[in-house]
Image (cartoon, rainbow, N blue to C red; front, side, top):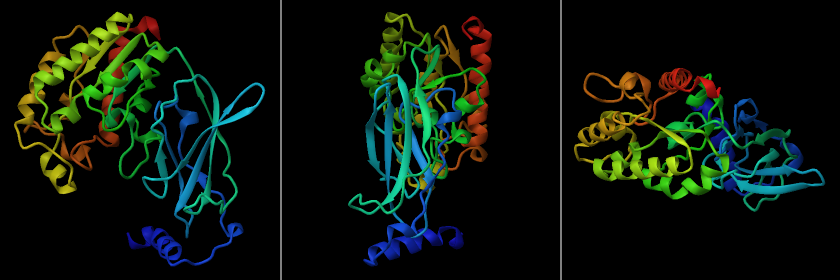
Length: 316
């Protein structure tokens, strides 16, 4: 374990010691996000790369490729970790783009050449999309959200546009519905929402009220909403990882919301296969008690894919 993080430890020591470095000493980063292999580009992409030893800061540049000229639309300094940064400005404008990364100092002075370019396309309209939180957005502490293996959408044979945003409550999804969902005009919107509400102590009645409004907003735009049951949590692991969890009877509140979800015309019970006999998220499926890991996301993706194929096969 120490050997794994030694380059990062050394990089921090060197940079903060004020040592001089030569830009020519640093190779361009190797990009690890896999947008070009996804069915659709994430609405909120997480750019990632392999960190270069003895460095700390990286600049991500995103360029829109136009018929006449190229336009820089993003420049982001890594803030989350040595190897990633999430773009919290949604990509709602259709078109062709590429992204690249370079090593910089804390003042954004270049310390390497740009990496290779990786291209992606933003397309609209789409047939299927998902509105959700981090479980749908993808990623975990150990795998950035821009990598295929940590996205449940990867395990769906039905292409699904990822409109999720990590950390969202149902109210936040309501707040961004018009700006984030409507530009893509989905025919079917999968709604996987509520776990963050329940985690911080919101009542089932409040969550259901927001889900009802989401349903009505969908129907008003001729979008068919498909709700997913709220996954459980594992309090022992959550507390060990220092994640906030209400002291109330969150299991009862979650059950109330799930009963409402299972009364709607179209729903997918993804929670059942992920829950143990105590009503908790199965320990072997989660590293932090909140997010299903790879095996869990495979279960989610396959369950949703099977449901869509069975109920909406004419749209594929």
